[in-house]
Image: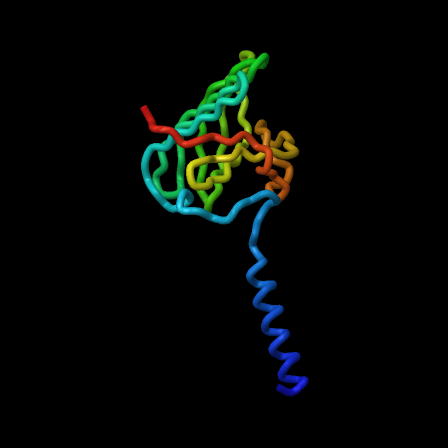
Length: 154
């Protein structure tokens, strides 16, 4: 193989490797899994760790979801409310409307789906138009977020 042919082959190989590494999304994000496929139906998830419990149940219709989300965190005021949003790939983007300490609030929530779990994303938030949203969705982290396990819906 000539030197120029070798260089061209090396360029193609490096280009292929770079293209394969693109599109990985936010830090801590895992590859898309079958759990993220477009499946209509009811879904229920729960996290119980120490004295904290988080429960999420929602109905999925195509790429839209709506349901209930509640947080019962030890030594904090519990809050329960509704969740509405969309599914994009392996990620749920939603608004959580809830009542806490007598105040109605709206907070953006993002969950990353894997085989039988949803992991809640966390990151810096700011208030925009009477709603708390992530300052930059690209910086949402999932590595240490609350993990909810899939469970049968009752």
